[in-house]
Length: 271
Image 1 (cartoon, one colour):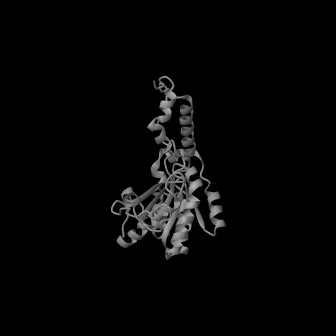
Image 2: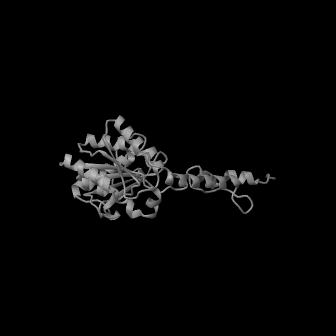
Image 3: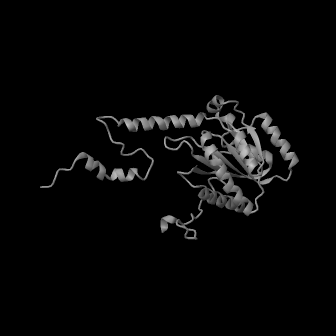
């Protein structure tokens, strides 16, 4: 007669357990009576605390400026019209515009550089300065390496404290840039407090809506890699210059490089 299967054996053989090893999503947590196990509840509370901390962490734009200087890159320290974090969270509209001092600084820079730029690069804290601290510098290196290889003329990196996505349009317009890329901390999730977003706009100007932007999200070590994000961004940039538009009318049809160093491009789903 076969031995009865124990509950532990059932749990170990459960297909949910195999799926849990493939994702950070909260699945197959188990139960203690009618509730979640204590460990799962504590992990959830810890993830929630990390997300809250990411939202309120101050943006160390001076430290990022120093890192850029070490690599020979100029930067501009700017601030949105939101005077503090409370204002930023309560008034999204203030985070989309620069304060007067920052606007004057950019106007003076444009007067000194009337030719403008092919690409303006903006870094803003958004809703997760943690994402910027961890991922902005590596992503900037990848963008600038490719931009220089393709002959794009880059602006100094604009570091905007208390900034939202649309503030990049004003920065680029005042700098006289043909295109703009903003790296910004995304709204933290319970498994991703450090997710960096990238937004690209062709012919940026104040007042554009999200329909005129292309977004590449979840850039981080556990998400979309820096090389893949760069690959998709430069496809969008080339197509935007060819078609003179961005946003909903510009689809991201970039072929993804094959894995395992195959040396070719293609859609990995098609094998």
